[in-house]
Length: 124
Image (cartoon, rainbow, N blue to C red; front, side, top):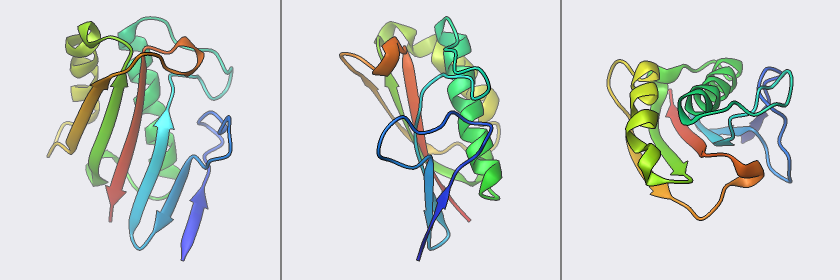
């Protein structure tokens, strides 16, 4: 059985998808853009955008009863691989214990002109 997860603190889904879906002790968090859930505004700069995307993931994890230590896999989409080091430094602030597996891609474009989008899979 699956359960749809929606945090009021994270931005609402802007399409036909859920913020997250939980099934069988696994939480699948959709890609999070760097939008402030309260204002709908996008953070500026790769560090602030990475922090906001991961903060949004944190809100969703919390809503479902998980935390960053439960994350086993992430995918990071970057508008430019030249932002990798700066993104990585902020990312390391959120994953301080055992690190999840991760993929990182440079993509041609992201929604709303974002420089980063991050998704996550967490397991209890």
